[in-house]
Amino acid sequence: MRNRGVRRSRWLSLPLAATSVSLVAVPVSALVTPAVTAGASSSGFGVNATGTVQFWNRAATCQGNLCKVLVNEFNATHKGLKVVLSLTTPNEAVPKLSTAIRAGTVPDVVGLNDINVPVFSREGALFDLTPYVDALPYKKNLSPGHLALTEYQGHYYGVPYLADLSVLWYNKTLFKQAGLNPSQPPTSFAQILSDAKKIQALGHGVYGFSFAGDCQGCLGFVMQPDLWAIGDNLITGPIGHQKINIANNKPLAELLQLYRSIWADKLAPANDQTDNGSTWGADFEAGTIGILPGAYGFLPGIVKAGMTRNHSVGIAPLPGPTGGYSTFDGGDDFIIPKGAKNPSGAWEFITWVLEKQQQLIYASHGYTPVRTDILTPSYYRTNPWNAVALQALAHGVAPVTTIYNAAFNAPGSPWYQMFTQAVYKGDIVGALKTGQSGFEAVAREAGDLAP
Image 1 (cartoon, one colour):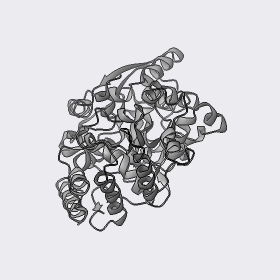
Image 2 (tube, one colour):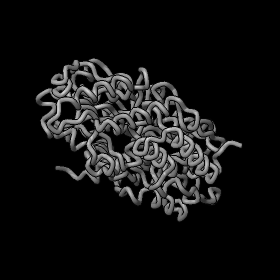
Image 3 (cartoon, helix red, strand yellow):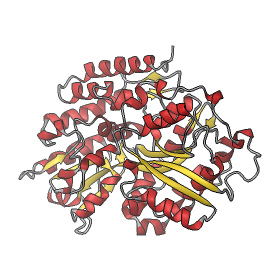
Image 4 (cartoon, helix red, strand yellow):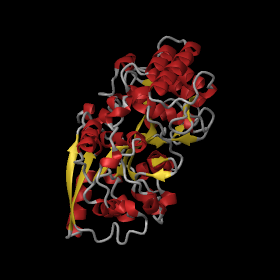
């Protein structure tokens, strides 16, 4: 059994990252600015670069060795340019980059947790890559959620790197035993609840549903797409002028009621309430759970458990209240910090990674590509599980805000306070008020709340 504590780190970001934007507040004018900032006409930028590229990648998003495979192949095919890979742990990625920016000793390229990119963009700590991103012939095919997180005030400060997406897993064997159609996963809140009840009725230690009930990041990762499926967002407006949409949010109330009903009717294991993410998905792999909102990254464990071999597992997008679907565009974006010594080499490496040939190997290493144009009939046949996640990518979202970690992931976050009050205590009306005031307090402290 692999280390689930490591697994959890992929969807639970460092709370410190966004609770204080002073982490990255630096006098940008004091940084060395290479020729790339002179304008889009800089000749040869990102082509036939030479020298060394220092690349920082999160260890959490190299669990399947994707980053190592990419770096090794790039170095083998680019004799004049060498990429040197350094892995950062979940607890050091943001502080280490912030320290490097303040010291003027930044790497050339970073694979940064995408939800943290706005924090650095807002502080002016990243290269403006707008003309180069706009020139990409496949720009329209890049993950919209990842790309949106790199945009600030009409400029791009990065590009998508890899996708770590949320999906709906379900047990086809249990569906069939419960009299449900194993080829028809739930597509609405009502159907999730109905299917879970029928599966629960099987007894013998089987449960209809499961969730990591003490993991703030996990819950945000799988619950928000249920709202995005119908265009509902908890945080709206541009950074610096954002509004909180919680108190009178009917779809959110319906989502919290769904989880409350599941909990009150004991359709989920009692130990879900204390699951901090370290065992998230283990019960599904054991074959005792009917429906699991989770991550596509669970696939290796599901395969190891033999569920794909005996055709007992299904995968589907996360549904909205009455239909539609979405996914959390988790994963990483590429950024080039200001002061990078070899930005041209960094951009050459970035664009090479985004080529179709490299994108096609993502699935075999546990991740989803960030280009939707590789979703062909051949890709479906070769990567049937990943194809479902990739299809959802076009409908994916990630909140564009600097307060994500403080609002969702931090211990005692307003998101988690709202969840526990609604789901475990049954006070949904009060929970919505708690969420509204808590989110507003965080946004106000960050200077992001609209007047």
